[in-house]
Amino acid sequence: MTKLVNLLARSFVRTFYEANIGFFLVMFYLAFGLMRSTEHIAIATAIAGSWSLTLLTLLLWLAYGFKTNAFVFKQLQTKRYRLLRDLAFYPDNMQWAALLAVHLMVLAPIWAYGVFIGYFAVLQTHYLHLLALIGFLTVLTLASSLATIQRVKHPVREAQPGLWYRWVSKRWALPRFLWYIRHSFVHEPLPAFFAKLGALLVLSGTFYLYRSDTYDWRLLAVGTLFAFAFNTMLVYGHYDFNRQNDWTLQMPLRRSAVFLTTLATWSTLFVPEMVVIAYNSASSISLGTLLNLCLFLVALAIFWMGMLTRYALNREDYGKRSFYLVLVVVVVLMYAVPLLVTNSLLIALGGWGMSGIYLLKTNS
Image (cartoon, rainbow, N blue to C red; front, side, top):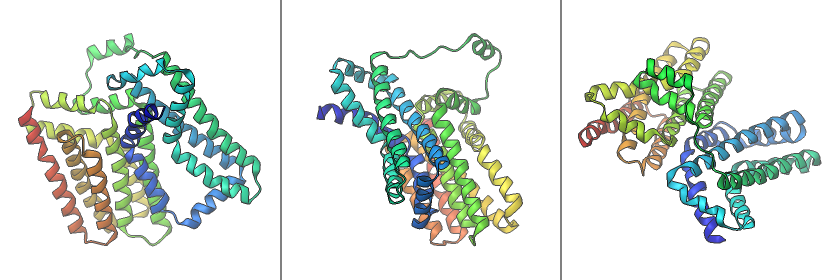
């Protein structure tokens, strides 16, 4: 039993947190970077005492549950984890216990927050709210494990494109730089949706803090950094990015064309974030702050493109390296390093990363 749980934990839990490191990075930034402990207590107290806020919390937890289930189901469909389909040969009670442990581990963040809210519900004697929160988490965990058992016993075949889609594809081809974006939102809609939603929430919250208190452009820079990191981790976690990257490199294009194709792809991916920045810039940012932010955005775009290129060169270590690089940049910003030094560091790191395009083109 223990060996089975360890196998499933390595196959599902570890890969889930690695693939969604950007999501949890942003949540960490929101929870511990923008909010004080008193604000956490105030929010938990409000949720524990209001049915409308409790319902909203349950809806957010349900969305997170869909996200975890979609990831587990996708892992079962990949060739790498076909051996896990042998799980169907274990006794039903052992299957259920092992998968229950797996879903408890992937749902651990919302369980921890549920216990935190439940503590304040007990202090206020709102026992019905406590029952609703803990009961919902229990049902969500049990239902997720049972749904996974059914997916193991009855695998779902991947659907084929419809006639209309095939007819359009024969007569009109997407530009190369739009292919990845379309594929990402069609084949993995939930991760793509939550990545864009998380990035937009981070930017909106950052601009709200900027307008409500005495912050300078560096707060906007840090928020923008994390919003872009969220999108970059979406690319990193996309199961078909490797194939798309190899397909791009094998095309009869010069290195400059490969670079421009990659630049157009990420620029299009960041359009919603750019719209939010432009909208808020027109109403609440001075010209000097806007120029500083634009310079930082240029350096940031070069930085993220370099990290994505290095990912193609060394896919095993990319997640850890990019995570640590993000922390370094944040520390540099928080210690009030001059703008010229900050941008120079980002451009240097991005230039080092993008030099991998030449190595990739040579190796291919």
